[in-house]
Length: 380
Image 1 (cartoon, rainbow, N blue to C red):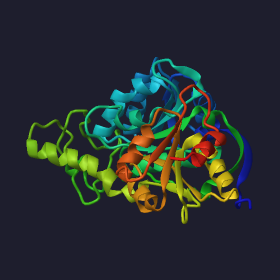
Image 2: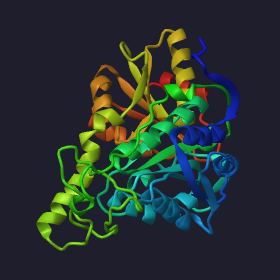
Image 3: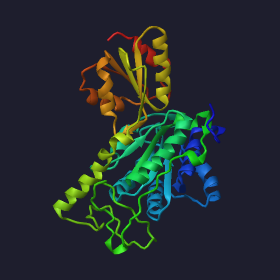
Image 4: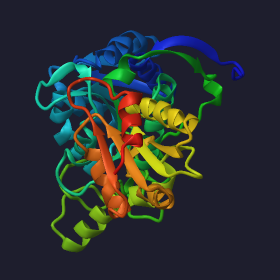
């Protein structure tokens, strides 16, 4: 049933991402062309000026990440998009955004690697890079869509989480979803929940940009609004200025990481299919989850009690959600286009109490329903 006042369009995944960003209030994009993410930049180059936004093609991915940090500090909802080696180049500044608590969205349309790898082929090998690509203990959120409509919705959600939690958020899609075209029902903008950063409610002289409070999230003043404060990648105290005080360092770094843990149950999102009664649990995400769903349905049609858990949030990892259902299964199958990055986390979450069977491809080809169904049928 069509939603009230919605519109129906045929959209490519990357185009849906760009449209979702506009709907979320994104008004600044900086990037550098790289396959297979370039359509996001192409669309926003046209769309942003029409809504009083700004688009800029930077000289490289490093500067693009720096530009969106600057735009966000000035009050604009900002985004960049990249793939493969471009995501690697952004990592240092992603760490800066995490430390300085600057809300922004980074889209990574995954392709084969390492290095230049397979520029025009799909992969899902950036799971660990999304979590640990930048150094030090730091918080991160990574969302992963499995359809064009979800790409639209999750782009909006990425902005909402970034603004609410003062943090960079990664949209971890892949070439298949990025270049897939589907019929998409775009909801009326008035029905979309939009979250904006909390502004300070104190006088400028009393403002603490990194205040430790009960919510774990300090209010954020925009540059130019009359609030003067210091921004640095160095560890800082509540004023934003660098500190070597061990107690203040401990408190700020703990708060920085705890704020994601504090809102963890609000962030993590999964979908389950046929998991109430199952002998085999299939876990997947992104484009591969589409094949996993078909394989599980085929198994059920043939009398095999298989179930699917599809991860919509990769980080924070849905360990509690896995723990809640895996014990009824005799074995677990993890399907992903890498050599087992997600499987490693599943083994940790399940304490290796059940066999974890890996279905992997790294040759640029998609994992098919048949690949997963064979693993379902296989004897341990």
